[in-house]
Amino acid sequence: MVALSCKANAEEAISRLCQLYSGDGKDRIFACFSLPSRALAEMRRRDSDGFCDYPEAEERLAFWQEHLAERAPLEDDSIPSLYLSEFDQGLFGGMLGGDVRFIRDTGNGFVSSMVPPLLSDWSELESLAVAPGNPWFERYLSRLALYSQAASGRFGISHLIVVDSLNFAFELVGATNAYLGLIECPDLVCRAIELAFHVNVKVLDAFFATVLPLAGGTCSLTAEWLPGRVVNESVDPFHMTSVAYFEEWGREPLQRMFDRYDGGVLHLHGNGRHLLEAVRSLRGLKAVALGDDKGYPPASDVLGELRRRAGDVPLSVSIGYEPFAERLRRHDLPGGVLYRVSGASTTAEANHCMDAVRTYRL
Image (cartoon, rainbow, N blue to C red; front, side, top):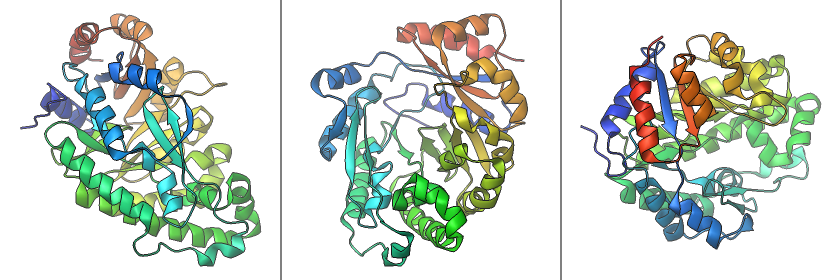
């Protein structure tokens, strides 16, 4: 029995997501709806976008509690979860002594983090290590415990997107020098990737040790909920490279992380769709979220082609409410896809649409 005060139909939603990620939902469609939010509106009224101070835990928790509680009557396939956005990038560099900086985005309610490059030169790599009692890791542990306790019986805690492989090299020396390092000092890049694995495992092991599984699974900003201990990976640096570079530098670190846990999910931006055939063959891949970016057709507009290229891997795409409702009416939506629908005006409108989603079959 799954019961969450921020999700009236939590048990049904998890049952449906099990169908999607087990492969039994290839002839069905799944949907999550975004709705107007009083909590987001209040944040926009009170705060401005841009650099900000490290947010107080109570401030972040209050936002998430209000924002997720608003969605309680929504009968879609979403699972409400808090995302520790203040640790989304800066934590990993901060654990190695980096200067962590924070950025507020009132569009999605996140306070994200990052660090300037830690090293002026690859030769400084050997000086890096996670010191005992590192303050940023301790802050992460403290908030994990606080948020997990507050979430119990109400909502879930989403796993973070890991920062490993070339993503980690970006943190160390910046993007340009990371790419140059693949050619000029590949041995040092290999050492950085090895360090990245151990830093990320430290973060992930702490997450899974602190956050109780929800119905035996992991809540996910990318995939809502997945059975088991599942990680959220990124291949963003390889969006700017050939598939061959991914195969040489990206596959092994990704596979190593998937194998340590119960598999993983990842996302592809518009300029990374050429990697789809390569990543779909990763052992333990549960789903791919397809992003939309300027200069590329929305994934929903070319979904038939992307669905074919992805094989049996479940996909997630964004789509507006009106085109989604029209394509639902025309029976023109590929199956095995989680549709993230924006623009519904009311909960009642979204719930009415879900009646058709649940009965949809190819």
